[in-house]
Image 1: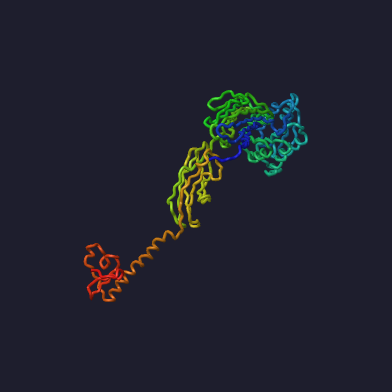
Image 2: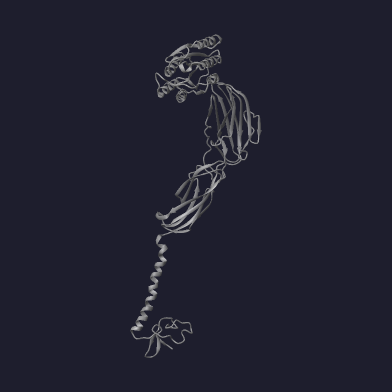
Length: 518
């Protein structure tokens, strides 16, 4: 079926975000007839981290020194924090806060040049050995206050909150933590939480740390053992610096039976094989974008749909390899049709239930969910939802109770997609019709009524004549020769009406012809 609509731009494919890599794709126009051109645009942007900020990083390292951290866990935590400091750039700044039953500033914001890094690492080594309970709220609150008061304009701001337990003193309500983190995020502070596993009386509360990270616009990391803390801190460092995407591979898989690539990409592809267009980009730096546009020519009537993801983007970032994104929209044909209709009767009376069957198929290249309706003339009688895979078909059944219908001749139709949600090539194949003659309810019993009226009219004269003849002393006899001539005994051979026999004269008399019959 064909729906006449203007060729509008389809909204860009929904952005897929992995870390700081944002991808979008658009197809313009969203529908094309054979021979028409459609423009495809793919955009890969590596953001700089915090929205609108491209400068250095101010980071606050918040380290748990409660009693449960005693031993190797505490040593590994300090090693991981120092690795983070070493990974900072000369224009960045870092701060160290340690907490147990209260939170203290171990080292104020310090520029991470060579001397600053040395001072920060020395401060980390001098943190008081672990003891005491966990006042997690005090630690988060202090780090946010410090960042708001001392964070530099134009710097990205990140808090790394690490703990192996859960709040055991001070504020423990999760809603209070979430409100605090959300307030920080509204001021441009990103909060990363790190949960350290292991046995203990108060194991890490992963749910709370996840909620804090979500509200703070960051991520939650879990380290099953303290030896994994270092890699997590370095991953967060790469994250906050908005690392470039490297070894980026982009593949566009075009359905060659539907569209033809016009060899006009603004960035020449590395290869084009059987509809697969491939680009390889060594690196997309932070705060930059890679964009390509190209056109295709429609071979059939095609539409752009977000249910197909023909664009594959694979890249490496911050030690992670082969990060994959599958991006919509893609090209498809959409075509549903009704191929047959049948009913259990062609004539019915008001009050009858008439059954209809129709075969519905999906000729398109994608699965479809749509409505199928039974119509009497132009009025919908019933409707049912239907889902069909590409190239699939099924029989749909309807029943029409005609109790409230008006007698007459009806054009009964089964229509696939009557509300026009599926765009197809053929404007007629979504409908099949059949005729139904609907009579008034009494017409079905009219013939027996007529018979009941006519039989007495025909029988009564014969019975009356017989009775009358007996009453007058007449004797009905067979007229000589009537059986021979095939006549009914006692009937006039001329008018075939009843005769009267006069015994006195031994003759038959026809009162209609007014003569004796010899």
